[in-house]
Length: 153
Ligand SMILES: CC(C)(COP(=O)(O)OP(=O)(O)OC[C@H]1O[C@@H](n2cnc3c(N)ncnc32)[C@H](O)[C@@H]1OP(=O)(O)O)[C@@H](O)C(=O)NCCC(=O)NCCS
Image (cartoon, rainbow, N blue to C red; front, side, top):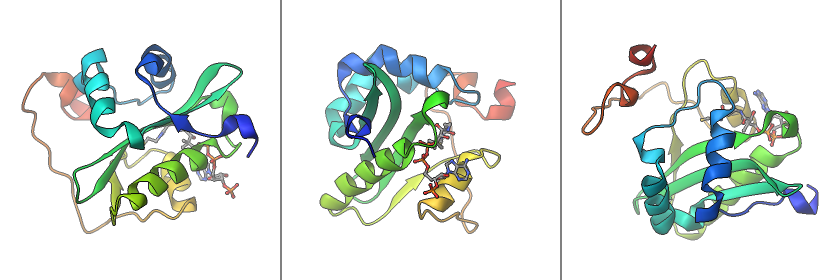
């Protein structure tokens, strides 16, 4: 990978560029947790697992991850359309996996819609699809934006 496409740790000041990046692709799942305050708090607690890639002074890739001392969780992996296929996504996931491993986290999970083509990407970089688990969710604070995708349509 070219030197300037290496991940660096995410900063608070990346927020507006990230919202722009995430808003640009269909099916993005921004929720109340993605407001400026939620973002700041997440970074404060999990900043060592959150990365961006810049190119030409722009943020073109992102990933946020965290852990609860048992398992890691990945959110907001995204690469700008024009920059895909250059190893940025796998570089970001490699950085997350290394950071979690270095803290002794044995396993990492992520949630993805069953029709997202990015499943092929995760297969390619060694992730496993679980067919033995279903996700159950309950909205505790918020409204329809925290519901299912069907409810949002
Ligand atoms: C998924 C995504 C992050 C991949 O980023 P990327 O920078 O293009 O990925 P890379 O260039 O690192 O690709 C790594 C490998 O995966 C393969 N790959 C990438 N996207 C793929 C896809 N959709 N299906 C199958 N394989 C894929 C690449 O060909 C490459 O294979 P190689 O090692 O043989 O060369 C990008 O397509 C994206 O931002 N998608 C929209 C956001 C999204 O859906 N994120 C996931 C939310 S959970």
